[in-house]
Length: 170
Image (cartoon, rainbow, N blue to C red):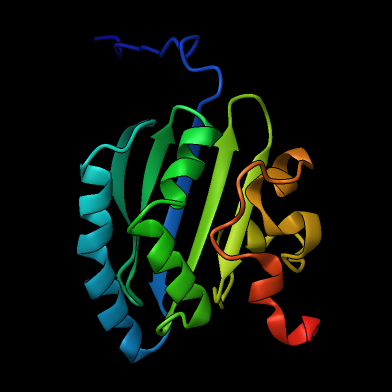
């Protein structure tokens, strides 16, 4: 019996963004962060923010715990609006001050071309950071739009670069 092969018509999604993300426990206290944050983020996407087409949970690994998701967004604008809304904005600002014993990453793929990758406290490396040169997330590389399209962000980042690297600017 032949396999029933199918495909999808993505013509209605010209600006589709597929994003993979994960959080890996790096220290024992990271388990508390992972377990405490998981339900909050799960509720936030279960509310179906505008532009989120699909969310799928993924377990990247069990030892150490490394959980995440694959998400399909209508476009980068809707993804950025969600990342700048609560609870995501609050969680992200807190995470960048203290990872809580975890590491976080995302890799995003754009239907119109381009790939974005960001890794915070992800030692050992994961994803593309295992084969491509890793560079500092500074200047145009600080934002997704800068990394992918060479654009200045139309929307201010959740945490401004000069705030994040404050010690170096003083």
